[in-house]
Structure formats: C-alpha cells, structure tokens
Image (cartoon, rainbow, N blue to C red; front, side):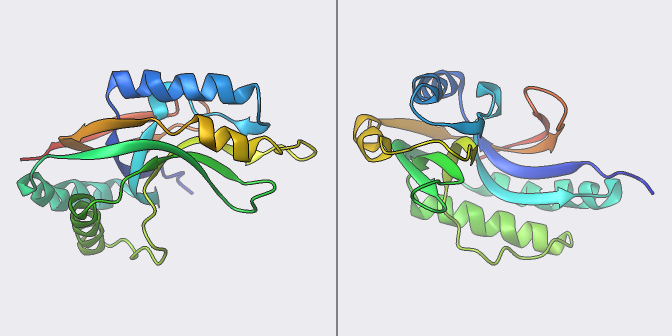
Length: 185
C-alpha cells in the first residue's frame, strides 16, 4: 500500500508577520502548556485541509485552482488571541484573522475548485485563524488565559496576494513545504 502525502491550501504569512507571531509564541510558552508550538516558518492561514492526496488528483487540483488567480489582492487584519475547544483546556490557541468579504469569496472559490477536483466539501463553518499552539498538556493550569487575551490584541495587516498548496512532512521542522503558488490579481 502506498503512503500518500498530505496537503492543504493556505494563505502564507510574510516574514515580518511570522516573526511577530513567533514572538507571541515565545512569550506564551512561558505561560501556557501546549505540546505543540508550530515552527515560525509554518505559520499560515488555512483555506482548506486536503489530507492524503494521490499524485493525479493533486495535478487536477493544481489545475482547477488556477481560477483563483483572477481574484483581486486584498488586506486582512490579524491579531487578538482565541482558542478552540474546552475553555479550561483549549486544544488550539490561535491568532485571529478578520473574516472579510474578500476572504470568504476566496475560501468559497478554493472550496469549489477542490470540489471539482474530487475533494469533499468542508462541513464546518470557516473560522480563519493562525494556529500558535495545539494539544493542551494535561495537568497544566490556564488561569492566566483570560489575562493573556488582553495582552495580545495588537492588530497587524496582511496583504494577501498569494495562495499556496503546502505538502506536510510530519517528521521535519518546519513541517510544511510550498509545492505550488498562485498569485492573486
């Protein structure tokens, strides 16, 4: 049985934003117990997780996604801290991403392209974010989480002018490698 590589479609962050959110991670590591803190080069905004993909399916997807290059470039506000999961031991700690009309249009078009390439439609509502940490370490206390949120609310702008397909390499750090880039506008 062949072992298929896993992929996802995302908006990459520029170097300045990777540095900025990596500094958040460094200071948050002192306060919160998570098992996984993504490498700063791996910080991104996921548009669609694809999972394992056969090479021929990937080729079809790469072709389908060319249509997103007709979309215009746009700006997003990033910042604020939030969590997914049980508030007492949240499974994901994230930096917020403004859900603009342009982002929703991009997300929907990515979803349609992926559908035409044979991928199942995402059932959950899109909640754009940048994962800063995941896998809460049991036995740790997060009483400081409410205070933390107040200290991490600076907004930064991301100029969205490209979308990429990342391949996931679980045994490496950084784990994600760009295999295709689409330039908007």
